Amino acid sequence: MAKSITFSFFILMISTIGFLPFQATAVSCGGSCRTLNDCDGQLICINGKCNDDPDVGTHICSSNPTSSPPPSSSCGASCRTLNDCPGQLICINGKCNDDPDVGTHICSGSTSPSPPTGSGPSPSGTCLPSGSFTCNGQTKSTYTCSPPVTGSTPAILTLNDFSVGGDGGAPSECDESFHSNSERVVALSTGWYSNGARCGMTIRITAGNGRSTTAKVVDECDSMHGCDAEHAFQPPCDNNIVDGSDAVWKALGLNENLGRVPVTWSMA
Image (cartoon, helix red, strand yellow):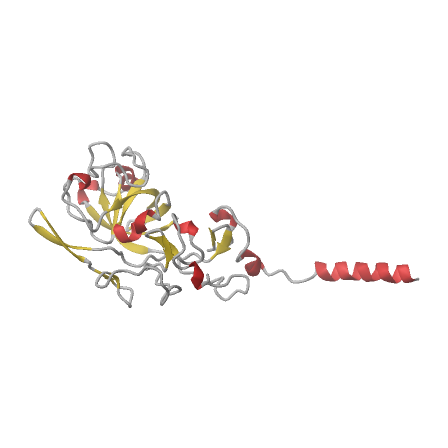
């Protein structure tokens, strides 16, 4: 009789567990992953865990008990790429810090590095000039930052020749290589380039005609320096530039003679 009761209780427990509600969001947030496609919805894979996308600004996991904000002890930790830093922190000058484009304040008040006084984002998130630069008689503002990155970031698309002897002068900074005009590659303004943290990443560019394409980040469109051989004697870039190859312009169906075209971009 005792064995029969024990067996019945075991069956009852299995049946009860089988009908427990499944929380898809809880499992997705903080769940193990290897690629972007492993995570549900707008979540992305960060350090092997599904979490909110800092570039899109989602907050699906922010109030979830399985995903808590990164501890302040992560601020200032050594890093080499964006993915080396937890949560919404990014790699700046080899240290994990708040993302000035997203406007996080996880490291505020800590000993981690911050932008120099008079440059970078203001408290309101506005990107302020860090100085000025005169090139070929033209004086331009210089920037260490770019406008905040969103799910649809406004930018100006310019044309660049990434091949040997092209507009860029030196090889692309990310891979120390030149690139054919048939490759869909771009250079981003200094702030968006984020000290190389976006090297090798794919972005999506959308033109006003409704067409869009993807391109790989291979270089920086320097918003601080210019007028030398390394920069093909061109002035510093504006802080909102996506400098695209011929293949990018063709994929968007744009006339290259326009030179500068308003677009939007996001992480692909």
